[in-house]
Image 1 (cartoon, rainbow, N blue to C red):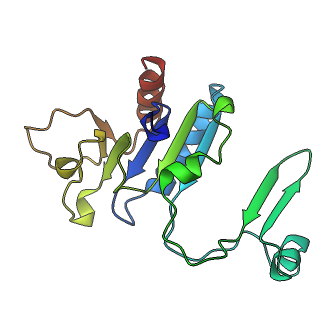
Image 2 (spheres, rainbow, N blue to C red; image 1 turned 180 degrees about the vertical axis):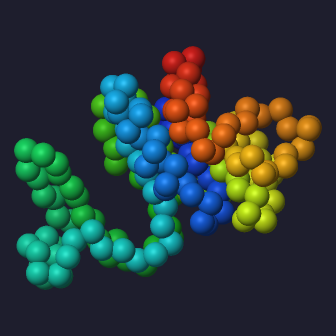
Length: 177
């Protein structure tokens, strides 16, 4: 069975600028206050650094180390250089890097073209089409009050401005799986 079929993996998909990160910032504290352990996987098309020039990790990576693990009593991190030109990593590769036994939820931002459980975010002001019509993996829609959705749509619809409702919906989904 594919790891992406796990019910604890829930994606949040939308067009850029819709507010996926902002919404996750509001939902995660609600879930963690209820005792849930959360991991987040975020897709990015941009080159990024998590360490800064002058810091030991940066200096060691720039000196040629292709993997660096740093740890303290508070957190640990692994920096891995993709040394060969490669395609964007798929979601399953990234999920495999997590300690699944320790987690209640894996919230995913992006990866909208992969097949796994997803919730669509939609804002009318973005003037974009709905994604659920072309993606059978979308099981709910979070939208603003201005969004007009087809009466044919039978997916649960949640208020983008009510993070407590959304968190409760996620908890119920995990509890019933």
